[in-house]
Amino acid sequence: MKAGRFWAWVVFALGAAYFFIPLIATVEFSMRMRRGAYSFDAYKVVLGDARFQATFGYSVLAAVFTIILGVLIVVPAAYWIRLRLPQLRPIVEFITLLPLVIPAIVIVFGYIRMYGSNSPLPFLATDTGTNALLVIGYATLSLPYMYRAVDTGLRTIDVRTLTEAAQILGAGWGTIVTRVILPNVLIAVLSGAFLTFAIVIGEFTMASLLNRPAFGPYLQNIGANRAYEPAALAIIAFAITWGCMSLIQILSRFAPKSANRPN
Amino acid sequence: MAEPFLSIQHVRKSFGATTVVEDFNLDVEPGEFVSFLGPSGCGKTTVLRMVAGFEEPSAGKIVVAGKDITRLKPNQRNVGMVFQAYALFPNLTVAQNIGFGLKVAGMPKADIDARVAEMLGIIKLPQMADRYPYQLSGGQQQRIALARAIAPKPKLLLLDEPLSALDAKVRVSLREEIRSIQKKLGITTIFVTHDQEEALSISDRIAVMYGGKAEQVGTPFEIYNRPATKFVANFVGTLNVLEGKVTDAAAGTVQVNTQEVSLKGKLNGSKSGDTLSLALRPEAISLGRQPGRDSSLIGEISEVHFLGSVIRVRVGIGGNTVSLDTFNNSATPPPAVGEKAEISFSSGDMLVLH
Image (cartoon, rainbow over all chains, first blue to last red; front, side, top):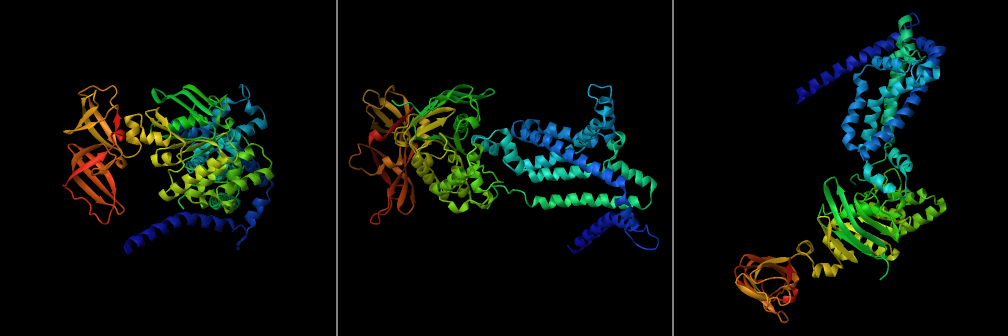
């Protein structure tokens, strides 16, 4: 028993070292911009850079639109599949997994061919159209996470009975989705939203190939030309991602509890 | 005769090749409490769901207060429903749950608050307004579900096995409460259950269902005492079934084992030599000869169970076994297993099952 615990701790320590040593090294390196002393100079340079603010702002806005689009597509679709088309669930799950196996570069080249200025849907002919296409692309990339999060949320409630209870009380589909279903899966939707946010903030391939001023290409550009700033940016991106994960954990405590929970 | 409030006319429901409800007919009077009683899969919930609008009949018509509602959506029917699984909205408080239908209907907030308070008073839970469903017991949740269903003053109340998920003690008290609220409000109610005691104790009429059809519709007294079919007789109450052979159809005599019983006027359509199933309720049988009981059979006591106030005795008569209860009498010891015993009954209480 004691030997087992010892080895468990050894494995844990090795795993923690594998994870934390590069992180600590990056933090340490990012603070060595000033010769002979630790400082936050690299962070000051990065945060004071107008391009950082512009690209970060752009990516945040793209993430917000991606989340809205994702919620509008995924919540009604997952709800309807649970309610009326449960036989389609395996097929839809497979489709939502495709962005994990099809590289983003394939998707974006497909977009460029499909939606070029000569196509019937010339998204790429204007900046607004390209931005919209980028958001659609991001919504596709985040589909596996958003769908699973929402579907898991729907699994915790009795979708059919709650829908019927609302219907018999006079509610239409809009009321049912917005006042009964969505509030009960809100935490799951937020989990999907934060995962989407984390993906969009760091995404490089689509933004770069569609030539959008997003945070991902900026990170790559800085990394190629500077020494300490990329390390600072990596730590900032890491903090944003972990901040999102922490928010999911905090918000999950406020999830509506199931009425059928044993007392 | 007055126009029925709810009229279910020749309703049929098929799912693919499977027909789950066949030519179902029922008229329900205003303010009546009718139970659909039957085993799982008999179609009782499907009929209820068609009345609610969750399933569309494959054929037939459903009329409420003279209006054909067969093709109306559930939210257009003004029907209240209580579900087996409570179906309270987990994100809303008790007061918000009860007021949900009123809010959807666009009632002003002050009126909603007043109606919610009235409903909480009716179900005797006035202090629970701010609780969430997960903070309530099963019985409390189901009372809230009932209040939510009746708050918008529906024309019809549908109860889909509302007591099935509750423990025995709560079931009894809640079924009485449901009946008392229903009587007070005078709301026409359909109650689905597979529990015969529930149906017998609170219904004005019962529709006993089997294989998608209503086997018999009648008052609890009629259903229990004059079952129309073998299924109804077997499903409702406890029954002793004796196999017999018609010896003289004209005289109405039947042989059970080697003994003869007279069933004058009850053998319509039977011929001499036919075999019949005869049934007797346990309470219609006495141990020993009793005044006023015109028939008897001799058998041997096979089992005796002392249950305190009651002694349950089983008597073997050839290949048949009859179960009966006698009250405990401290002056008389219970009969012994193996003793010869005579059981007596009125031939009028004997049911001939077809």
